[in-house]
Amino acid sequence: MLFVCIGCSHSYPEYDAVPQVEYLYSATTTDSSDKKIQFVFQLTDGDGNFGLEAQDTTAPYIDSFQQNLYAMPYYIENNDSFSLPYILSYRIPRLRAEGDKKFIKAKVAIDINFAKSAFPYDSIFFTYFVFDRDLNQSNIDTSDVIVF
Image (tube, rainbow, N blue to C red; front, side):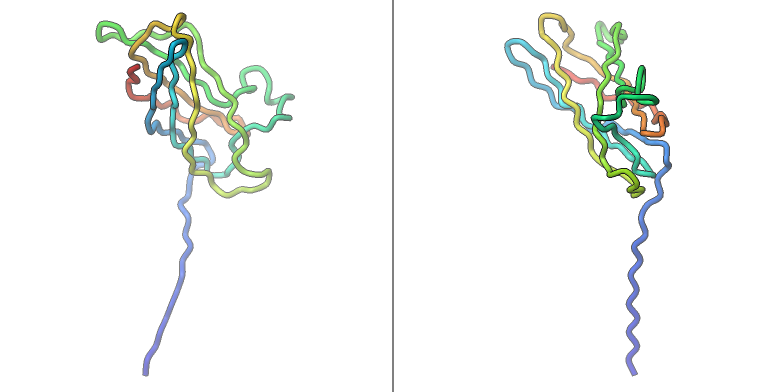
């Protein structure tokens, strides 16, 4: 007598509803006028509510929540790091349809451009974080040193 038992288990990982970011890598290019960085990080969001839509222009998505990625740039000089006097902010579009509660685990790439004439730094790094649609702030992560 032969017994065959087949079972499939589709168990998905459990992620926190508060988003998490993890720096992956950066790629740099320069041309006659600009220094460019493709900044890539991994985003996980357990309830899938990350990203902003074009029509998200009223409360609560106003003031500091008009954007959902914030990066603080630092430059390195003589083995010391110094923060630059501004914060970079970006608006990452919605990644899942409204009501879709499936978790998100995605690589996100941001293109950052600096005018060479206004950005003399050759070695920089960023600390950064994101907000989800419920305005939960992620962890703060730090990139590797990025060299032009």
